[in-house]
Length: 330
Ligand SMILES: NC(=O)c1ccc[n+]([C@@H]2O[C@H](COP(=O)([O-])OP(=O)(O)OC[C@H]3O[C@@H](n4cnc5c(N)ncnc54)[C@H](OP(=O)(O)O)[C@@H]3O)[C@@H](O)[C@H]2O)c1
Image (cartoon, rainbow, N blue to C red; front, side, top):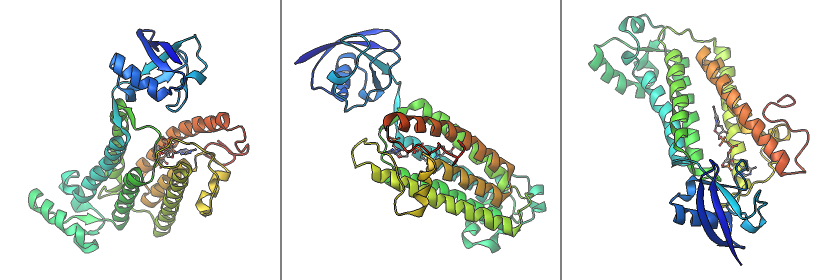
């Protein structure tokens, strides 16, 4: 049976009428709107009213409870960019920027600071440090660069973290949306790139005092433990969703002990992420790393509370004892 719908933008602007059938889905409707009103489907969010929530692509139109009869609302999400592009750029940036401060200190710190630096001669630490140091020495005038072991290992851990995120984006995550607003690209890159420079400048500063060995070891243990935990949660979430679908299920711990945190919180990947940055703060003894950890925790707490509420409204049998991000508290 044919169904004629009046399409109105959530801003109030009427676009016109489209015809679908009673068995059409939201995705079919988006295609019609795209064809008739030149609004690409990835920019559209279909709503049952001006303030309604986003309707899923596989939802049948005849089953939507429309606020006004035969009227459908569409929100223009603005220009979009692929998730993979955003994630690749926001995560590759910190590796490149941190690497620049880590490998080319003469370009960022004064010669006097470098001469007064406390570490060991960089050439004696690890062989792959030699190439850029020789290069920089030639360009900048030949001061011996000293590197602290803690800063060296912190650089490796930082690179592992963001390398892991790029690999997860490519091979683990099964996102439900192919795109996001292009503005997010600038917002996310500013956040990650800005913090990368801020943290790297302080961690790699030639006059930075390294933490005692026991604190370095403790921080490294926490960091690695939480990275493995975070990866374990991402793999569990991937396995919840069959390939090519947008299915959502209640996550429950599997045989991997790191996933037990799901018994206590809805977003253990965020809990582990925060743990990693606390570990990094301890192993570097660096205040900017703590500020980065707290900024991330603040953002992830807001998201975790939203995701937790969504789970509870979506699944009536959702475990009652779970919190959002911090066991027993938040
Ligand atoms: N340091 C920081 O400031 C910061 C901030 C945010 C994130 N991060 C890092 O980035 C990682 C990814 O973040 P995110 O916000 O994308 O994580 P997320 O929302 O937990 O999603 C991870 C993946 O799992 C899927 N998923 C989530 N719940 C699901 C369910 N119930 N059933 C099936 N699939 C489900 C998601 O699909 P959908 O596309 O459907 O959501 C997505 O593909 C975090 O774990 C964290 O390590 C860091």
